[in-house]
Image 1 (cartoon, one colour):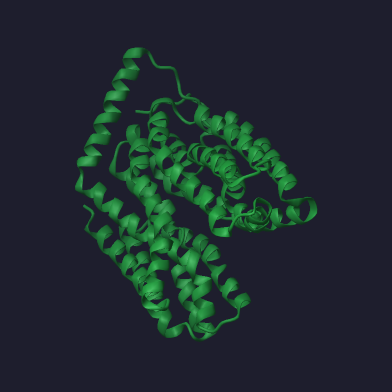
Image 2 (cartoon, rainbow, N blue to C red; image 1 turned 180 degrees about the vertical axis):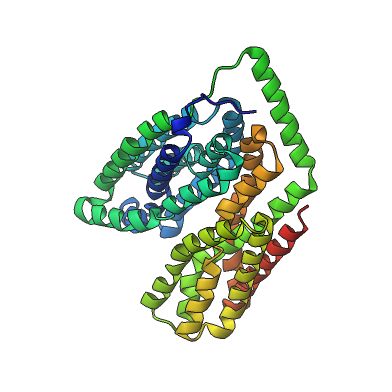
Length: 398
């Protein structure tokens, strides 16, 4: 079992508050800010927006690959050293980002940002929570962290936009790097519990237990059903996030309305997380999550029929948004219920690799389907089918 120093006062709300703050700043700087920099970077680097966007895709894929060794480290040594080092690495990477002069340099920097993201964002934070918080409080603890971090885009998109207007994209990145380092490095160094020292015999024993847990998970039919579930739902949500504005414009809505309605996804994701956690006290997490995925399927399945009206479009997007962030809290809860916490981070890392690849490739597949069919209705029906598949697979998971 993962052993942490006995510091009970840091195992409750102070730890959750610290992780909420670091996840908000981490996602805001390492992920969401990129959207604001896309156009000025493309112009300054004399590259297409598609080429520049590829840097963020690369970071996501690198983070997925790095999740496996990061998970092993977390299971063996705990989260403090990993998350503190990742904060330092991320801060220096953002500083380097501000000085890139070519696409090659941009891609190199974002490879490092991908590694840093794997070390500091949701998955290691969840591993710390699950290893630290009592099972009866885990759902509320995970909910607390994700609700606070859910405001990352709402805070950092306008903040970054204001900084770019005032200082330009390069100097504004220096300010974001300062925010990232000032907030996340000390909080991870102080608030994340420290792993106690092992004797060599203890460590060898723990490593053997962890490896046996991971091997058992990889042989477990239920694990692969969870993989298929979250791969399908992850591809669906990523596709909607990328293509929804364009589809609503295709339906005849003004761009401003399409963007505003798409913004409901983030707002409703918080509502969905709250509702799922509350209902999870009466029914199993798997059952509640499966119902939410089925609601998402119904929402996107009817969008081609109802989306021509503003009320219909808003209703469908609102219902889909209820499940937009549910997978984030359902995934760690389901894994923690299914497998011992000793190997949680390693198992979670193995799960995240195919999910992240699906999230990266889903929008590209949707674009190909759009080109093949000449419209978005087929894309939305495919999204509905993926969500319905995810719901069915989750219900089949023993």
